[in-house]
Amino acid sequence: MAEFLSEYALALAMIVTLLAGIFTGYPVAFLLGGLGIVFSFIGGVPLPFLGTVSSRIFGGVVENWLMIAIPLFVFMGLMLERSGVARRLLLTLQRLFGRTHGGLAVSVAMLGIVMAASTGIIGASVVMLGLLALPVMLKQGYRAEMACGVIAASGTLGILIPPSIMLVLMGSILQVSVGALFKAALLPGLLLGGLYIAYLLITARLKPDWAPLVDRDSADADTTPLPLALLRDLLGPVALIVAVLGSIMAGIATPTEAAAIGAGGSLLLALVMRSLDWATLREAVRETSRTSAMILFVVIGATCFSVIFKRLGGAYMIEDLITGTGLGPYGLMLLIMGLIFVLGFFLEWIEISFVVLPLVAPVIESLDFGYGLSGQGLLVWFAILVAINLQTSFLTPPFGYALFYLKGITEGQIGIGTIYRSIIPFVLLQLAGLILCMVFPALVLWLPGLAP
Image 1: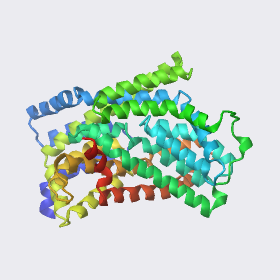
Image 2 (image 1 turned 60 degrees about the vertical axis):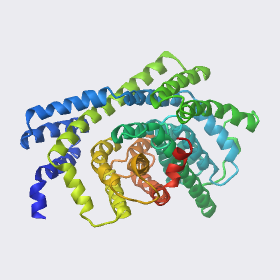
Image 3 (image 1 turned 90 degrees about the vertical axis):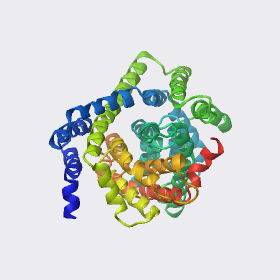
Image 4 (image 1 turned 90 degrees about the horizontal axis):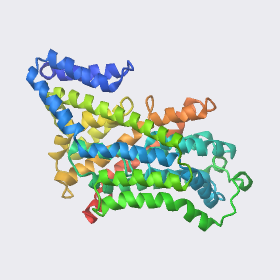
């Protein structure tokens, strides 16, 4: 052990310093880049080698055509959030399931699934669902734990169900097809949504006082026949989903081109809904710029950190740590997933993706899991497992962003302890979905194999 510590002292010091720096509240993007530069001097890295960092950033990140999809997908989600589509759809779904115990919660989960396939943005989805559904659910007598849990969990589906900016970044990191990742993530995302709905119905059946029937008089009056209302309110989102995902899966458009279709489609939908004005457009562009800039700066910082980390032997350290356990392929996979799950308590998914994935991917590629998994198929399966795992990072304290969004919406009416308790069953459901996809790789790889 002493030999190991001395051999990889600088690499270990980089990790420890990074974890310590995160708790200071200093911006992670600058922390990653700064640590890379500082440790390059401490480790005696030749100055010309730093030129490879610049070439990696400007040649591999800034010029990456896939990265253009990120602001386009972000813009699409923000425009949909402001178009009024979600509110009308929630009211219609409420009419559909209103006479069932837990029906309103099921409506929220279904709306989360639909909007996840339309937006792909966690913050927008959680805030939107919270503002629309939380006051109604509490007014109807829903237990706060159930209301908060379903809103937070359903809002996080947008990071997994395509189009997802997480999958775009993972495709760039692992050098795998983003289109294949989108296809592979569809069934697992729907599986998680199905698990949420099953849990809500079972809980409402066992504890009807947690999810009482909706009072018809409390819902917004809508005299439109229910089938016509469903068609009216589902048509816009479904058309956009088909245009974006359908063009990718059919091979008609690349993810970047499909993102442009989605951005244009969201503008058209907002125009049809008569919610497109200068103030809305300006705010959407501003938020898109802020979100995209944040992601780009983290990518640049993480690139600098990972290049220096590998130069100081970090990649070999990770490989020795993992393979030195003597575990088999699935044991190592569980170990890696456990590590990512724990890191999700303290780090954002962007940092985890850019720091951890490049280090563990070569180890995963060298393992034999059976099922004929190898090459790109193996990396696609691994990426989706990581994506499901990272979805929990939005729900786990102390830094679960969905919890902070939800706490802000409640304006002090619901304590943080209640919000923490509300997400426990949903985190367990996500871990159950992760295990199912790990044990049955066909859940992930069937659709990519069907439509290569």
